[in-house]
Image (cartoon, rainbow, N blue to C red; front, side):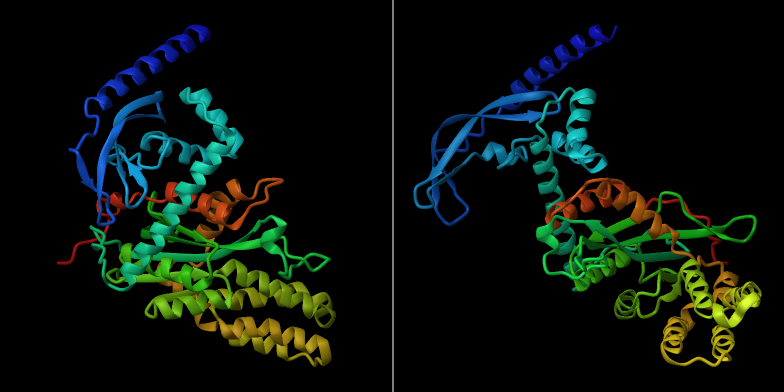
Length: 423
């Protein structure tokens, strides 16, 4: 059975490629003896030339008109542009298939999947180059679009129906790089050398409902992701533009979630000044555990009881209580500086830690959406064992991963909602 299936599939693909070739050859792209070359000159018809390109059905050869510009000393085929094949050797359909495979699995495995599942043979290097070129174009297009949205030269329509609550969660994660990408950078290793570069990730999602226990529930299929290795100001533009596209200027409640990193909140304050800011509760609890370990020599056997009381303070957003309970112990020198640094985290983020109030408002207080994105969108493809990336290569694949993990733009305006209509 398997052999029969393979033979029949090969025959059908060959037949389909032949039919596609005949269909495309019906128009050979002759547009008269002369055509504008695009640089202010006239290109002349030279001859009909063959071009072989790969499609989802296999290789297809097209005989099309070729024009040459004497002044520019270059030629072109109008038919290539008509088919979206100018300068390309893969059809748009095969390019999309290759992008999906390469974004899902390492390049060698992606090439194997294409051959096993689609009957298309591509070398590993070709799969890599095509996917990275596509991802680079996607990232560049996203940056151009973001610039237009921020400049208000492109105004996205507000989502319809409008969600009740929109969230943006921001985080970063390290990706292992080749030595050339980390040369001269300080790292956390014993030798002080950096081996990773941070990719910044943001996810936007909506929420309209609470579960039976009163906890918020993320709307299924409402997430859109942004990731880049570019500097913070470029990432901030991408985040702001995505927020606007998702309805940040129109929703009733915009909330930004993140850990205590200063760059996150500086970005949020500048780009979304009216948003509610919430520090991830679980990061805050980790910091509280660290604080209790710093005071362990003073707390003695009462450490667990002290920590339980402080965790309760944190759940209520009573940051003054945490600070007062820690400063009651006489400390000096290095230990005092250590505790003051730990308390500075809580004092600087106190307005973002009103957890009881946030929960009463039905808001998320954890940034699990972006942390799971760091693992699922970035980690499962870019952080596999033995991988070492270049910045351009990793950025390109991250762009493809985000595109495939995100809700399609067309669905943002068609999502069902459970909001109560106003009387």
